[in-house]
Image (cartoon, rainbow, N blue to C red; front, side, top):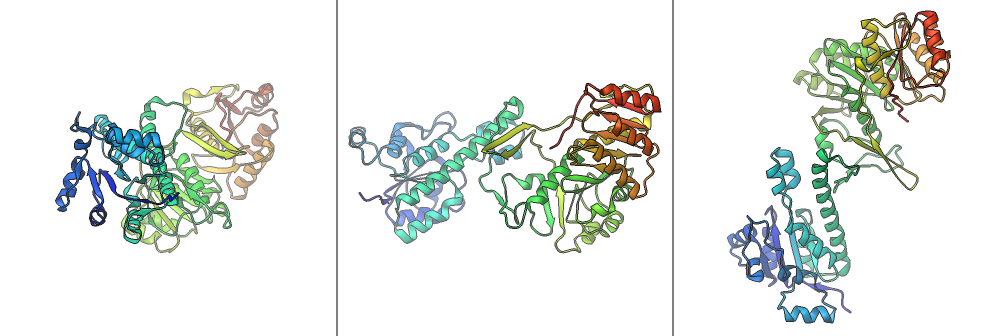
Length: 508
């Protein structure tokens, strides 16, 4: 049986008329009967071409403000009936159903409307019902019907009309059906995610019809893509294309910087902070962050929550780094930073951070709520006889924010709201403590009066002992070990302040 199909009748119902003219003119030249709706019919008529109104097929006008136009057996019967089924053929003849061989749809701009207004009534009105139904019906019956589900496929249709006189193969129709279901599923995902902002159901639907190709994956021999809208997160101002690892670092950095309100700079390497500081000005914050670990900062990613001025850019420019992200740049600062051809410069945008995170493993995907908790003074319980003073408390809260964003086992040392040492990704908590102390001392920091944060409890007193012997005077940890008293008793014996939060922040 011949599986090629010639287009004799086409239904055209599109929101955006861009690019439609050459298609309509070519269909008309090929003698294809055109059926159209409302505004589409008016547009076709403006080209000097006549089309049949859907109302003449259905016997009904567009009703309820246009909410119902194509939802009728005369329309969907013409799309869905199987041309090789005798029963379908008989019913088509009995009910005088007009066969429809081509369906061209461009859906209401739901996502565009969602980003341009907060008025729910306007957003809801841009949920396309008839269009999405036409797409699904034509795709389901791909053996007989060709579906063009969006403007993105107009070039495919034009090639078919020009090169093959409107005759499609089964393979072409199947391919278009595949694209159609990608469009419909993505559209439904966008609608679900809009409603789920308030409902917070434990489901996530990702709407990413066009993944962003990356330079490569984790290693150059691996391909990489990003499924999402990077344009919502930042504006790329300068530099080479982003890689898989770049995005991992950016995600870690943006997540971290969101926990700070005062002028803050963070320098990241391999998803961990190697330098973080809060100061009164951008320049002071940068200098303090870099001092935390100038060796690891080389080739890292720079994130800040403040406008970068020329004096700060001058100092930053002395360092080789891959990416800088900030809410803005003074023109002279941008010119200075853009002097390196491959350096990636990103302007941060305000966006809705996903509250769910995923990780693919084995033969499936893990999902969990993102760790959005940031401890406040009221969350701290003093368990030692020595209570922390105001400065130590402020530094402990600062350190606890950093340890939350560090790979477990993680230890963070802070003094005067500056990261001065960290031990991350260690298999032993004692090793993490030793690593953090050694790094701080190597870069010339005095640990007298510093504080220590741990992402998990101390099952033994050894970690606290090492910290105390190095000069650390206050410790923050989640608590919860059956042997908590060992570390608490050590603190009491050596006048070290210890607080517990009751919340652990593992990051594996």
